[in-house]
Image (cartoon, rainbow, N blue to C red):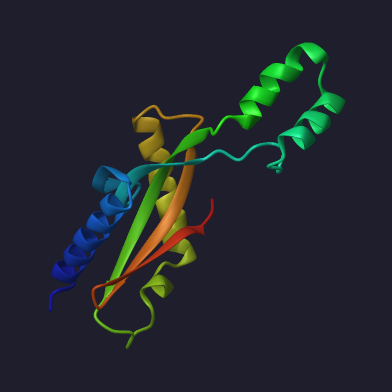
Length: 155
């Protein structure tokens, strides 16, 4: 079977999987810096709070050590809110019919990752996106089975 057909098939499966998981597809097959990003999407994830603690009394005690009384209430409200952040996700889809030539993830070399990172920066600049979290995922499609590797690599 033609590799383009196999790749397109895998991307369609990956796109449907992401939509089913609540991701919003922003763009497909984005080309920049000599690299094609298969899927660019966004998702919402819980924000990481500065204090890793679920106990409101303990948060209050910790924060009161560092903050003046005037700003304590605002900070406490901010920490206790169930805040979430938008994350732009750049997804590389790797499709294989079998593992004869290795797992799909193994094809995402460091060189490929660096190209993806450059293309991601270009996308962010073109769309005037700043101060936004970015993540690089890989989706393996192996014999119609999906394996989503979240944060497969970093900048």
